[in-house]
Length: 421
Image (cartoon, rainbow, N blue to C red; front, top):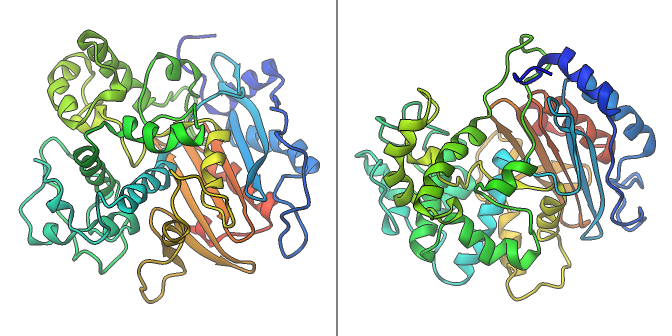
């Protein structure tokens, strides 16, 4: 096998043939009848679809898929299929870690709501009252952006600046008047959380959510263990043969890790000021264009979460109605606020909650989020809080959306409008 990553459909086929393609994790629990939709179906994919799934993955050159289903408010079924890395033919295993991309946002939103309930921050207080990053521009609308605006995507800020090393961050429209998706806003809110907690993002997540929830394989950052267990991304099925994709976060993290080891301070403990200080050293190691600003080597609330599929399903359980809630969990009122439309705009078919999107179906409202990183990771999570069920599908292929859409349709019976974004 050449050192260059196998890419394109031909490389995927060769690798999958050597592996035997289908490797499965055993279900956590037997399928139950506790959660049915209006047609009486469970969300656990049936055997006929699972037998067909490897052919679908092969058609779209997606080497690996993780699926987990929540029923009756608990993780009921988990399955891993295929390979974490097509080049090495490493199979998906129980503790394989996926790059969740924008599925990072609802998880971070949960932490923010925990801090709101503790009285340490407030939804309708402007971010500038908490923290003013040095990369903000000069614009009066910046002073009107609130925590709520970030979580419902009404800040007016761009998704990502094209040239963050030189371009100041300013809103393009008046906050609170329109919905425009923004990763930059989540990073600013992340810096607010650093200020309030005195901790790095990952330290705060471990203390407030991952540790208490038993999400032992979840992290927004990077270390040698995560590197060994993380999936590699693979190009879309229609990419040119031999066109190996850049493993963006992996390659950025590996360079930052060298500085972290030199300092004796793990990346999990880095705050924005650490990334600022490290930037010149990391730039000296990096190829042109890979790293541009401190945000490229800092845990990212909008995009850098890594979890096993079972850990993400555990998080979905926290969003369900009728839970016996531990003291560290959100109250029902705060949880419901995350799943309640936060802005009414004419003509929108989907609503924005706090960290989640909402879509109305024949069985009532569903909460959902998608994820896409570097054109090589495509993910989707969907939940029905009232019926206490959910599904998450994580993939390591650029055409993974073609796969996760089919999984969700087959499992739930819903043809979601969110797939037409």
